[in-house]
Length: 247
Image (tube, rainbow, N blue to C red; front, top):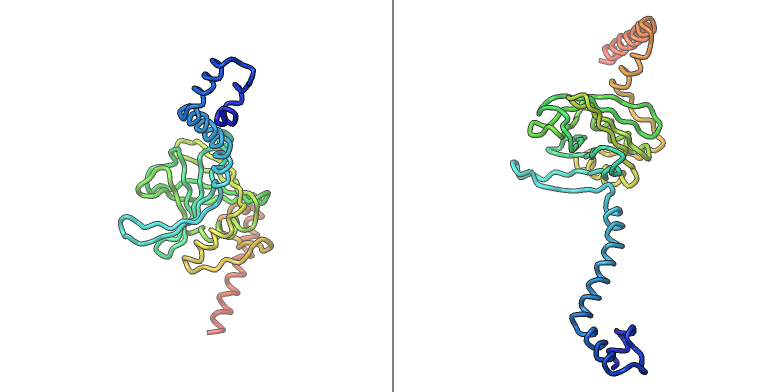
């Protein structure tokens, strides 16, 4: 009766007939109790699993071995953008063979293997930067850049949100927004693996790249462009002369 009182309270009524008590005891068999326990565990998983999955969807640091060279390489991986709002795009900061790379991983076709494609990114409300990436030789859905890798990495440390856009060979634009919260530690760790030391650039202006210069130059009139290029030419000539004098 103690088992009946603790686990089968729906049936507990001292004034009911003996037959009802017998039914209650049947429902209190180990099988019934196991089923109730299983239901409770399932409900707990349904409640807590989505929270855990969301919490794990953050910037992370990884180390793996290359299957061909058997050498260890490291990479920082971004979280996935919200489903339904953006395309599947994931950013990776990679240190492989002591070379820093920034790679983009998509679930859709970008371009044929070893082909260049347009890549744009914007940190918060700062001006967008346009550059070229190249698909890996073994993939049509993954691309990378080494030339602009450090510039991108520096920019990642200056904001809270990253918007990226990929222009594919079939004239389809893939886009995503990636939060930069928690990015600093894994990104700096990868840079450190490549022998690079990244300062906290939250208040530091990043280097002015050739891609950014060309983008802003294209907004000027032809006459303004000639004036800018003329001044740059003068600066270069004067710099060369100064270097010759130092030698």
